[in-house]
Amino acid sequence: MTDPQLAIVMLGLFIFMVLLGFPIAFTLIAMGLAFGFYAYYDPERMTSLFDNRIFDLFVQNSFSVMSNDVLVAVPLFLFMGYVVERANIVNRLFFSIQLAARNVPGSMAVAALATCAVFATATGIIGAVVTLMGMLAFPAMLKAGYDHRFASGVICAGGCLGILIPPSIMLIVYAAIAELSPLRLYAAAMFPGLMLAGMYMIYVVGRAMINPALAPKPREEDIPSMQRILWELATSFLPLAVLILSVLGAILMGLATPAEAAGVGAFGGLLLAALYRSLSWDRLREAVFLTSKTSAMVCWLFVGSWTFASVFSYLGGHDIIREWVLSMDLSTVGFLILAQSIIFLLGWPLEWTEIIIIFVPIFLPMLDTFGVDPLFFGMLVALNLQTSFLTPPMAMAAYYLKGVAPPYIQLMDIFRGIMPYLAIVIFAMVLMYNFPEIALWLPDYLFGKVVSS
Image 1 (tube, rainbow, N blue to C red):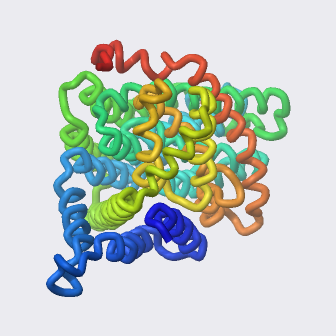
Image 2 (cartoon, rainbow, N blue to C red):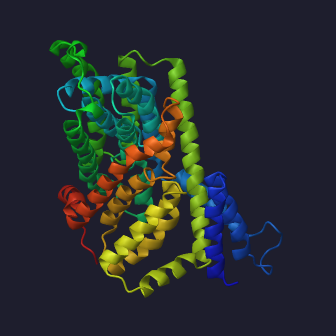
Image 3 (cartoon, helix red, strand yellow):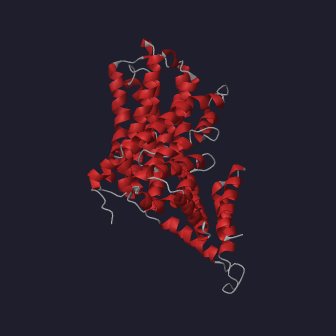
């Protein structure tokens, strides 16, 4: 068996092991070490069984992850999000937006989507957003008489916005992989993220207008006075909005690096929780524990993915796939459709980290051949990964919601509620392909156009 064939076997075996339920990070490490031991085996150079270069590569990758300046922003953004979550600030945010949108058809659904979008900017972790909103907004919508399939789709789709809306952790990782500026990526993601959230809200309002039974209007006796509404907005929505806009504004205006802005955001989250008198020792300890746990998981995923990808490339896996794609003599449109279709299918069994670190680098060297801007390609990938969390039967957002939903909510009902949002995401991808300035105008305006050599 030749090395390229062995690389394909390595890839297929990894996907098979993941489907069996083995932990992804440690499966990546095990596959990388096992196949790498064969790939780097050199009996003439090795003085002992453990004198294999794969172990040096593993240590080097571990050190690279721990010393990567770009990845420093990950635990800081996570800490900001978990502090905001544990301090119950999101509860206040949802209630205040719901009151402000009380006269809009499907007001609670609109408020849930807006809260998901805002909370996504604070944490960027889909599981955290879907789970929290599933415990907070989902019961409230069911109690208000909302159709459970309609409400399920809102929570799952809104929770996935964390991949796209800055400060998305996925964008930080893509920046490191594609060697792009995180500042340009954040700027490029602003309009697509707002566009997708806006499309979701337009759909929700339209469905509620066509079929009011899906989303009953609030009763007059349940609507508080205007004075209380304004007070809720001033004390709940504005402080968190100011914190998030300050963090993103500092990044986009070049006043701070993502890591520096994340540090300010983490401190601001602590200050906000203290002002709300929600900062207790137990909640702070929980936030620190969850940040450490998630950061460790992400770091091991990076180590495993980089080790796996290095061995896969060394065996010739990247080359054989690249030659296969180039042999098809595709147009630019055909290449983008093929690449995005593969990423769409991979989103079923794999997490976004493996897709970004292992598979996206396969396509990155081909972008110049097909004349595709890597910044624009990254935005298509970010939109595409929304579908990976929403596509049955492996729609992870649905499983997150099912885990906190009432027992009578069936998984198939959640799947049915998700389907319209899948169509919206695909439409957004088509729209952005035809109008690439949706993603490229803001980074070009803020930082100038990049002149290719």
